[in-house]
Image 1 (cartoon, one colour):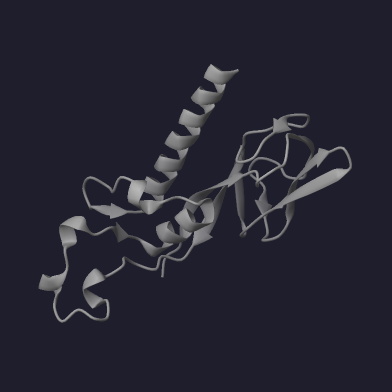
Image 2 (cartoon, helix red, strand yellow; image 1 turned 60 degrees about the horizontal axis):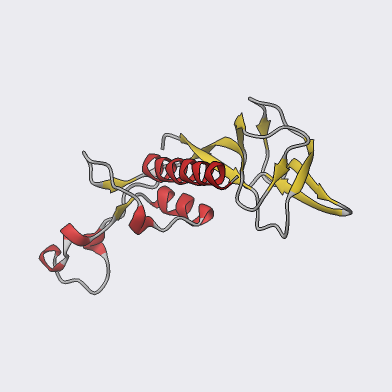
Length: 161
């Protein structure tokens, strides 16, 4: 099987208040291993450590030391190597006698790695627009949705500031 890479967006966890970035343990382009310490956040004597969720390469840092970080803020992106698992085949779902019973027009066609990515990011796949050519929701569609939502959040924050 060929491997492919997907971009994973690493965001701040739920925080009680704004935390400061006190340490960035990685560099742009660096390869990191699962559970490796990436970023340290501090508020008073409380520390939060952001670790890599998978092996991968750091592709972009959205923060610098001293930045204030709030819940859900985008911290960095990583390129994660993933083995393709193929497409979900709705017709093979148990309980269906043949494919004519499936309402394809109203079904979501989702690549399993995209479902996994959406799950890790807390994305409701029913809000993601499928690829206009294939009709499937892949990693790219999930990433585009997240980037669009983050842009809307950033614009809202500017309006409220």
